[in-house]
Image (tube, rainbow, N blue to C red):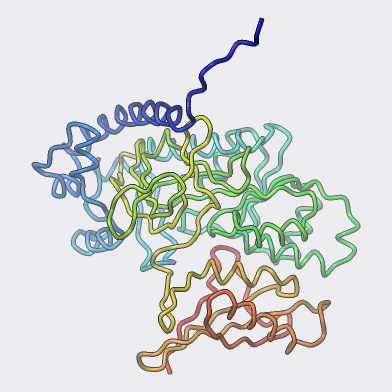
Length: 435
């Protein structure tokens, strides 16, 4: 008897059905959110008054996009917290601020329920990362301030059942020693600071001979955790240690985490976010494989909700086999970071990718030098003390690589190790100059 044959359903049809099911569940949550927000939130009542939002199709067609500029104007009109508050002020128990990377820091308030929703998101992330309650020791090697940062991760790790260890007010060497002494298994930090700790460890051969318990870095705050060049450098500095990427925003909370099946992707947490990826010029949803701006609607953070919020993050849209939305290559860049240099569009992440090809480079800085209407870029690269002795040769090789990539000439200067600043949180490598 011949083997039975079955008609295979095309992947696109399967994905369409899965996406429809996901969207249906999300609309149920979104509709409940709108029922509350449109009654009690002054900010959104002004924006959406008399706009029909009875179906998901109407929401996508009629609900205007939000931007950070709108939030800034709202704070100025209704200081100090703005009018995007669904509850009376006494219902809010948490205070934080945005990092100020792309503008003035914005104050953010959260109710108990909002905070619990973010803790639940982080607990989900830790479960996906294989964090072991009672065994893992999670280290946070930075000082906590009003920036949301890893505040929620710290509290969620404790709830999961891990020993959490703060590392504020310490030098990098002291933090490395603490990681050894207390057999830290997981460290939460930015990719930049994980690189710095690795460089510091390499400078102390005695530390390399010790027995380390570290098995993973959970990195966030910068796009580097999904970029091949940064990952390769981290894996070289920390052999055998997993690099687990995550991204989120103060305005929305945790958004995505590295896909365990595809390490070069971030998986969007669609049970807490309604996500769109839109063409920045047309506002139309891009097809799978397309690149656009990530737009988010929060489904559980009702106290200060975002409805179709433009994150500014440039991402590539792909779907997992179960229909889940993923960001291929992580965060590719930021729309507001792109600069035009003599007719060439340059993204900082693209410059970073070129510089990461050179193992001799341990840190760098880019200076945007404006002469009237003209803009030039100067790249300063800090070279390892143990690398090639001729810094001029390194600068020349980097200059050629940048010119070949961007068809643009950039001045490159090599400086000794220890010259450029180091960063615990988000790195600020691009400096503006006017001459």
